[in-house]
Image 1 (cartoon, rainbow, N blue to C red):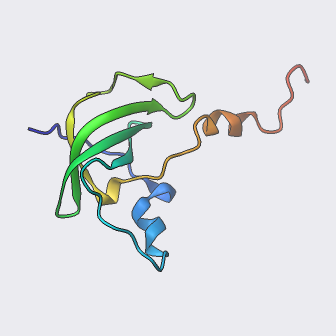
Image 2 (cartoon, rainbow, N blue to C red):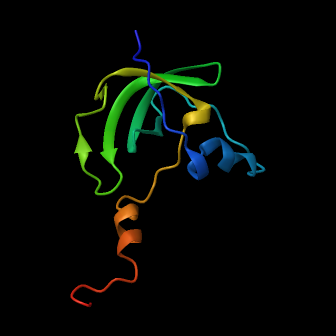
Length: 113
């Protein structure tokens, strides 16, 4: 049985939106592929076991904090190894880890007041 997950909206990082403009399109995920999504602000990687009706079914392979890249064993109600359903609409491109912190630091020099 799979765990029901309320995935974050991928917004500008949407995989489907990205491939909309690609003339080559994209192929459906297959067994063994690793997909990414967002859950409560963290990156979740899912190892696909099956793909049915625009939804991947697989195991949570990694949970990663976006701000520092720290890997977690659990986050919210999600734990490594959980079986989840990941709709294509929730798939997200991988962010640059630490991007949020770097954006906050732009233009600031330590020690300057």
